[in-house]
Length: 267
Image (cartoon, rainbow, N blue to C red; front, side):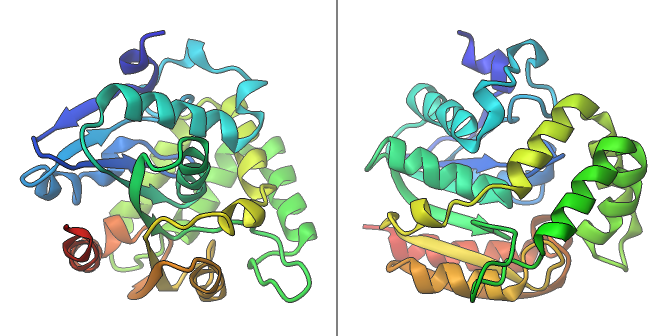
């Protein structure tokens, strides 16, 4: 198995600590372009594409393996084993934050800290838990995606990106969605939006930073507060930003929060 080709892995910089960046649904490693170069001056930075996304090896996509987030977490463990040196800081956007949690639990002690950007362990409201969507909302979203993926992408991307003052970012996300193989995207969307990783989240003791946007359609503030309440060793930082992708629309705020957190993790 060629992990480099499978996940289109790129390594930047040198350092005794590795920062691993993992993108969200419909995206690729290019989404980290405002964060990765600065961190590569101090750390070993590893960038990659989830299988089925970006320039990953599409022939490696196995619908059985990737029928749950555990399949992606297994790939993350492979990438860490092959490319990471020293302590690993896992930076996960959106669904990748939970992929990072699963990878941590699969290989305890290998990930030294998590930075979760717009994370959500469960998108569907249940009892007192407010994930932001009803089951009917999610079913409708998935039905629309199934019947008209390109139309769904062009409608949802601007809403997900937010950043009303930077329409080029919404266009970029739309194009990223549209470059993804529709069949793979449909399965990944179903796996993502129907996932419930609250039980796994409760097992995590690794230091974690939760970066939550003040106005996020996909991961509302209630979700960030829930994660902070569940994780015993976590910090919650609210970024003044509309949208689900602050690493693109508010990169300076993300970098400041990450730097503060990483400085506190230094031995």
